[in-house]
Image: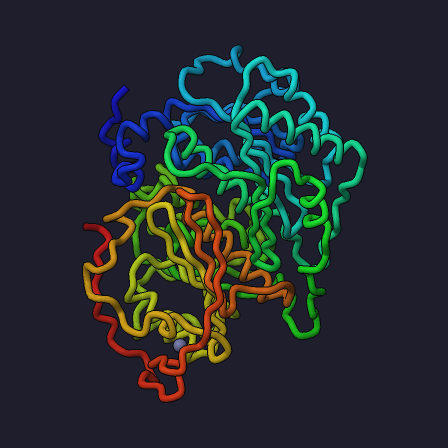
Length: 496
Ligand SMILES: [Zn+2]
């Protein structure tokens, strides 16, 4: 099989990554994944990113199948190269990989579980031992705002992990903790960790990078990530059940979540994931700004768009997807170039702004406009296998110019279209942005204010470092030089 012309366009952002390239994409298309999900709702992001990345065969088993038809319809329209099929419980439990044909390439398994449905989880973990064929397994356990991801890439690891976790489950030590905030973080945790599991799956399939070692524990309420040993299930249990990261939402000081308005500038890779997650957790209004049209080369990562909507304004394509997912969501679209003449007018009615842009001049414009209007800005940027994110509280925390005072020279920083980006990476950061938004709107947890989150996908690392306000910042420093929106001249044409 060689890639066809349309496939080359579709996977262009992958193909220009030397670690993937054409032969790598071909391998991904020949690979298969078995997905076990407690519920379609929590596993949907996982399925979308597997499909967008071009994992050729997706076999799923869901305990709760509510929403499966819409998911499959969307997946087929997102990527017709991918075959998605439902398998029954018997086939799943017996691990009848050999009965499903044709399986030629790399095969792996992703297990996405939550504490509410623990009975059957224990059973699935124990049943792995009976499998004839070893399958590398990515296991995700989610408990509200906290969760864990573990890669079991040898029979020994699978054995030891499943014995200890089954014991914990069967002993009923793990209890689902009801979320203290108005919004349950389950969807955010499940979406983030499962989208990250796609990165690990791709790395295994292509034998690139450094695989995740140990158990990655994540707490989105505190934006904390740490790696613990495979056998340290007791510590994992303590971490997952500890309530220290939570603070009760100060409902009186905050609007009702359902009345909140969030503006997302850019409906590409970051904006797709952020809008998807905010729609699912129940935000009231989402504003979308973009003047691009949907292109086939967007579809390796921009899960709100689809092949049948190529050519459509991105804001309309996103509007269509979101309204089908949750009809009561209010979506306001701006099919226009975000610039210094309309920035303040568009932003002023929103509670929070999410940066989903792919060029530096709009990033600086957003930073300045949000500072002038005192609107919180959730920043993120992705490239290749990496991403970074921070939350800017104007006047209170470091802004984008505190770190990068001036726009770099044209050509000094490559764009995604020049350097490529792995499909799930913007997904991970869009979900981080959604989590930050929910925390700010409900008043719980600790945000990335004055902190920078860096993710290195090839080396499986999340690093959070401290930031400080820069007294010499030309925007928010002691002697500000910028008091109004200025010319943003740096031009980075992403279509070239
Ligand atoms: Zn600043």
